[in-house]
Image (cartoon, rainbow, N blue to C red; front, side, top):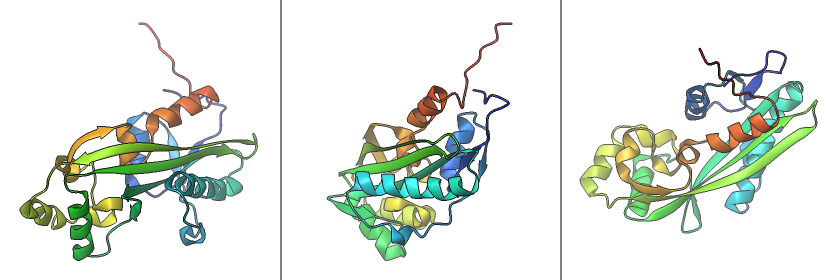
Length: 202
């Protein structure tokens, strides 16, 4: 996958190492410039709206400073029984979250926004994935908590990390659960001519 030489640089408006990894795995060249918005200033609404609006705010904040560039913003939340599960702040909170998710299906919502201010182009969407956890024993929960992996992850787990053993099945986009629906992002960038797929037969 190539970016035309005369096309502006891609920017990921997020400090998330997981989003960065996903775009790197997809072969994209980009810079990382996290947004400086106050996320608490975005009012809580429906999961679909909240994640999309927050993604738009992140992308727009960076796009204001780099108007010639295409900017990608994103936000991910975990929802269980209409309750948003954020990043656990303690061992007790991580334990409670994992017990809530054990043997149950929850939803992961990722809103993403891609914009270029100079071109006056913006596209935003929210993707939902259903995730079913296995029935977790107390021993499994305690082991996982003490790996420290849960503590910077929404819902207290990382599907792409050690937490992969927690997940029995998913219905929807895997990369969406990691933090960015790569298929949809790349489809839009190709449609806009930001990326081009070239094949040379030797």
